[in-house]
Length: 131
Length: 369
Image (cartoon, rainbow over all chains, first blue to last red; front, top):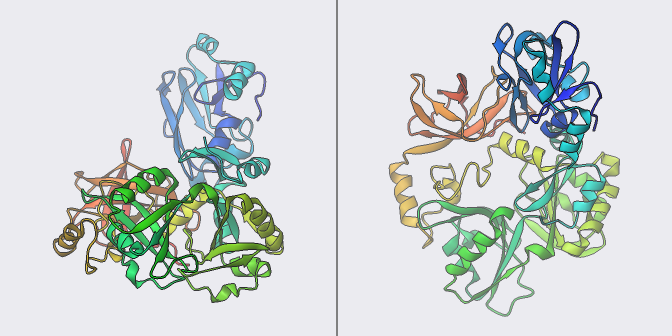
């Protein structure tokens, strides 16, 4: 199980990686992709919308389960990773193969950077999973 | 949480484990879709030792089985099995089961012997139910904890297993069984049954020999690329065939007639629990019917309890099972709909949050093997 440093984590098993100018990438954790098993579809229909922390920004379908995706912080959804978009012939299992890299799900502009302080760091998230 | 005789083996194999019916069970090893294809195309092995087994033996064993099950066990010759269910007093189903008519070598003169194989989650409930209805001269023995069970399923099952026994496996026809020597172990019950639609065998063995059987099966099957398969693929495999899962598609409140199990509800046999109600339902119809449906244009997957609507948005039922079909590449499911909507080709709508997914009623099996 991988818990990269430098990311922030949520109890719903999303991660967020903050870049410059309030821009951030969001995906699901290695633990989440293992629990879900192979993803078969990822739906994100919120591009262009400004959402609050904990709002649903999309849904993942695995063979056995459906799971909603939640915003770790408030922000505007700028982009859905089109490499995951099956309607464009791409591959949702990238999330299984590389959850923290190629398998990022959305790019956002964060509304309020202070909200990041309420999230877990790698060590705290690892403790949550392994307890 | 209980273990099967193989739980530690699954953990050592790196399986994803989860609690199922009180047992620590393997959900998947290499991924559900890959394991699913393994069964459809080659051969794989499920540990289903969590299942329950009861022996019913005595002068009136047949009479008890006839009273508590819906199918006609009097039609079973020794060495044959049938799918059946236990109706309750309210018109629902206590559990579904397999009924085996066993050899009578352990019986006194005039006695018969049956084995009932039941769902792990219902072992105590079924036991109590049958006991409560046992007004007959029979004994019941719960051998669930002493019994291991492997399901070796897939088109290469015969070839993969034949080197383990002198019994010609190809001659064991569907829903029959042979008890004999297998992998050097005595008294293995080799049953040509399963829950996948891809053929193969279920092997009942003494619990303490289950690990030896598992190892022997993998050694013999290595040449055929035999693989372990978890409960995740077991569910997608059964759903592609439209087989009911107790607790999802059938339960204490669903009648076998509305669940499409009329074929195991033999209302012409002499007597069984709630026979008259089922005869009336068969004659007059039921207010709802379990139907299958496919969603070839959709990628969202219908799940248990999602509402079903008609074209104009009235709620007409509920999804009981749904999955992405690994063989077809699109979602399939089953659910109860109000009478009249179950016609093949009819369009129904599955409600997922704010969306409505258009589904087409289709008679299972969804996948033709």
